[in-house]
Length: 382
Image (cartoon, rainbow, N blue to C red):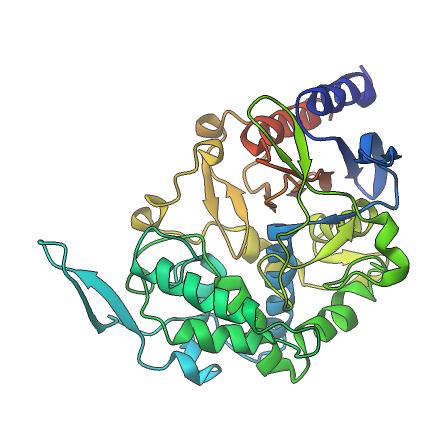
């Protein structure tokens, strides 16, 4: 059975029950073995999903950010276990919010400093903005203030964000838990300090240009605006309403990039190919192995509880398969990748030299339904 006999009906099923449109590209041992585009990039105009459609990739930015940081690791500019304050002094003497048995909030010094590795592995004590605890509430206030400063002329930097986050007590002692957070945004500031360049400039010169990723950026050029896929909110009854928000006014290492399926496929296959593509080496093979290894201990894994990632651990910015039986997965141990808020997804498997990139733009993203099915069907064809 051909790949298309299984994958095209699956993509069509997704569009009939979810996003306005989607796309999938699979590369195996250097050869593009599947590519398909289904549905619409914009409902109002009837514009179809196409090869050059640009997507908000949100948290798939994280894999790019961690790759960039590992390039500096390979240059000997830091060690993973170094204290973060050696490079970002604003994180010196971190504090932690704690509560008494009666629920009263108080602050004490953290048990230890944040390590650089804690940023990669989401064990830093940082959080996202929200209302789950006091750190999340304070981060919400800080991010609201950062967004309010945007006036179209003032360039907000990732260092601005880093300094704002460093002023807020952590949610837990560094290294004691795993929690999804703004850690990779701080990693962007770390890259700026070590490289002496803006985060975006470093990515452009060291990843995007060498890999010929000409449609990947933090800011959409005016001449390419008509290629941007519309983002939709889906109601419980299936209606799609356009969402014009959800953007970041700074070069967010956690969620800020836009890209095409072709560009991101080149990046993904570079990693699947051991860090090299078309003669351009971005990372060493052993560094890719380190990235894809599980870095969480049992205590940290206890907080890594998204049901559709059962059987996976967490490496240096990526999910990584540890237990195929627990995952119900037919992929290899060490298969790794991540996904994005609007449903984008990447799978990378160096053992098979296999990579797959899926794109859509919908919230809620149905990732727990789409992504395991894509994975299982893809592996069922090789």
